Image (cartoon, rainbow, N blue to C red):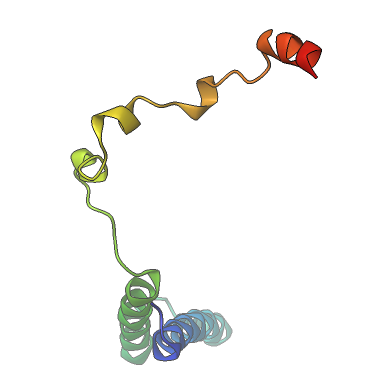
Length: 105
């Protein structure tokens, strides 16, 4: 179950990523104004991006909760053989037996 702290981590991580993207755009605009060549982003923007990504990923994994197993047999372990062959999509409830029951009323 996701706690308020986990949701707060997601919000902080996403906010840090948005701020890092804004900082990168501002840096590019600054380089255009000063007519300098773009080599790399400043280290503080890179650190903020990586930190925001790690915090957001950790918070999202905590909010999502328990993951299902990848093994396909994991979903079938708790079911009986009789319940595996039932397909609700193949039930036909509009059949001619309704006509026989309508006469009995």
